[in-house]
Length: 203
Image (tube, rainbow, N blue to C red; front, top):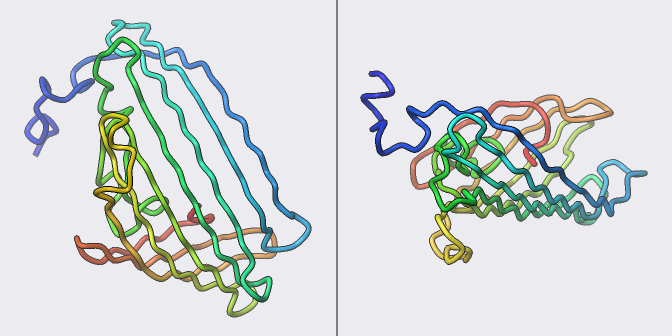
């Protein structure tokens, strides 16, 4: 089945319109964490804003803003960490037009709501929460229990806790002395079970 059979080119913004973008913007990050111990604990806050100017057809001029907060809390022994994350991302066409489908915000997959497939949910804005308990059971081997929740929405009225999609699960992580090298996450949602295999921390 071709893409044209699965999606209506007329009803899908950006499907049949070629666009080249000039990108401007930047990001700032504040790290209030104790890095002298492993795993490190504390708070990380990141804020980013980028402007995408369509230089081909002027059909799409999109501004994307992202705010991401992570909190690492020691639980008893220092090899047990509770990690909290809150993230929101917004893509807005400054001319009042429609954001192309490939620039919309998505949720689902190994780094967002792990009980769903990659890019399962899509709209111009999203809201995400992650909770993860990490426990080093052996040297360089961690277990993790997690719960993820979030949603996508079209305008600021959707910025609430209503209608959140959620998933939960269990993970096994193997790592070397300087970082994570392999991750297995077994997740469950109302759409079934899914296994994610990857490298690096989940968030």
